Length: 212
Image (cartoon, rainbow, N blue to C red):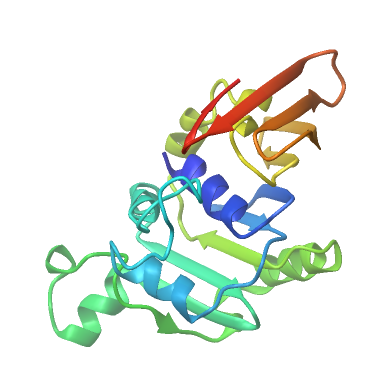
């Protein structure tokens, strides 16, 4: 569920666009939502620390991001001019433990952006020029596992999100773009149109439940 969780987190940050791409064996997922603040970092570090409320946000309690550890044990987040990492190896070294004794996502460590490498930094700089603000970087990512999750990805994945209207994925031979537009009819009703097709969805939401 890694990509699903990243979409939900981006949507909760009022992101309109999500971009996914590879730089060698490094996977980058970018969004143009509200930059990270202190509470966002705490929510990722501690399960249950999220301020999300049922029915008000897609994700809940900050638990979902833990799924990201299935594709990498070294995750770097860049947002609001800060670079920090969740790294199993760094955490184990700092605590004088073995890698098997520490979780990947628990303690964030500040890092210098140069540790990302020239190619990744160049790609991030280019994305910033396009308006992207927050970047999840997965070093030595299990690309095949991630791409397997993307099988069947289409506009339907965006139906119950509130803000994301465009997702662009370019990972090797896997390339796909899905775009939708939303027309807010009322607090309860939303009309979604799939860009490039005649498909439309009517979404009805009430009391924390949505149907399309």
